[in-house]
Length: 471
Image 1 (tube, rainbow, N blue to C red):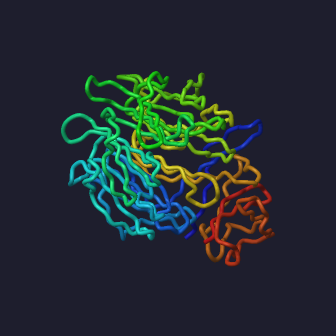
Image 2: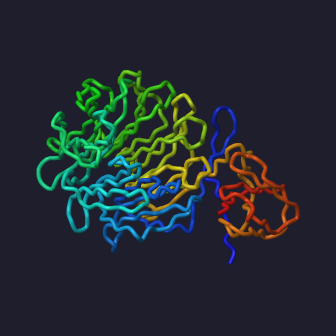
């Protein structure tokens, strides 16, 4: 049976005064389970040098599900059936080394199918084998958010968690790490309790410690809030009043140096109130004073998520924003905004991407070709639940493909022995740095057994082109 690779041209843009193309290819034959109320995170869970995926969410008829997907290095995943996890929805998820053994652990919290509101901490032994269970040291929350950083400068990762408890008002609590993933509530700080929240650590004032932005609803009075705190370096936070960031809930914040001036800028999205939302970018002057960049291509969204990564390999961070457009017709959107290098973001056509109203977006180099791919999981208004990986076909050092080219059929792909074509062709094979590896004329097969495993680009004399994965 033939298995062909179809090249899909989904995004075309111009940048830096020269024509360029950014293409994302849906990766098929993956084991991903579509879910709603989902979270996702990526990291090398088994220390084999590639990026794995961890997801939690809910599926109608199957309840709360948790999956660890292991990567073979080329962006093909298998479901890990050796590990057993309890999952949670309507909460948050992080992969980080919480006990200092150079292996990624798992922290998540939210609502479970059987245990109510809990927090879960799973410790990794370095091979992708996990031990752990619900942790009593961190309270269980719902409709919350969290982030981690070494806030007190002692060399380990602390946690700040927000959300609703089973009874009473929302809670915002900082937990300090003892270095062995033992967490205790900080007695040095008191934060307003928030839910429908977002949490983001970053050095906003350039003093080499982790400051804090929290957004959400206090429940009492139903008010939206955006709170900014500066850190004294020892984990003691002081609220910064008079900032210019909008007060929001059901939103997201993300920090990055968008204009390459050496400080962290902020993108913020969320609901301003009933029927009104915002998506805005704020430039930092280096001291934690923010100025909104106007005009903006952003579409205002609530119930949102923001991910910042360099997707076109031009050295400037781009942004993906998904959410619910309460301001105009109430629809879900997922938009990609490209940076011109000076911090100005412009939208491009992303009609092929799923429009998520909830769920996770993870950006990482899943297939090892030195560009950033995108994984989506969550609910859509068009096609129900989804879980899909888009591989970035941006080719470093190789001439761009003409978007009118016909697809090139080759099989099997990935290959470890021989690759076959539908008919004899003349072609060249390049590595991902644009170096010519070999040329062949009038051949219908390619023996790949002597080639180094990895990603390649195969191009015919007629201009047809395809990515080839060799195992």
